[in-house]
Image (tube, rainbow, N blue to C red):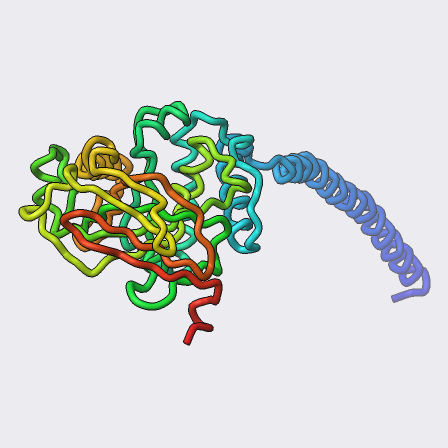
Length: 332
């Protein structure tokens, strides 16, 4: 190739390289700009979604005021029992007439006890006296739950250590021999379900300071339950008419309370029928083997460590409790 031809070829090559470079520059710039635009668009699209998500997370599920009040009442009563210090009434949270809310508190406290390992042993009936019903402005009894660890020894001291304001009352206790879960419960069915009756002392207690209670206070507080002691005599109902019984209760041999079977809602078996129907309505019917304290036969009296309480119920015999302030594990 001549020098002239070499020069021409070299110039042509340079020109071709320059054209290619020029062609590549706009394409690269365009690509870069497009990528940047897509990134910005994606960022903008994500921003509203992120903000909305954060806003949603900040909005809490609304709390039902009634449920909050029920939980607060349960917490207050539970804390009083745990600390050994009576608390203010819970009617500021529940009102004085909302029985459903009060029983909801009782169920919540029962569930907590069961979760902690407690065992249900039966029920107790309260407000079986017409005079007490009139005082509280109600026309029916109430009930609470009995747990196995509430049963005091028939012989030997009964510890009051975990109670705050104990009072004793004498009652007829029914021990069930059959479930009461039918939808057609009547007096005959209930009577037939009773295995036997025994004399009983119920040691009621209140987590509410100074026993300043209304209907909702006592229901929420598990019917003001504390402990119970059963006598040894087991009498079948074919040998006993509960409404015909009489009762005398003594503290250190001094007569402090008297009453009759008819003082308990007219008939202790009528109280049992009421409880059987009510428990079934609440979805937790009475079961065979459970103990039912049917309600006081006379006025209750305050008790303290060192006293001996004795109740005599005609047709059933005697039940006695000697009280101490030592915890169970410290007794000899």
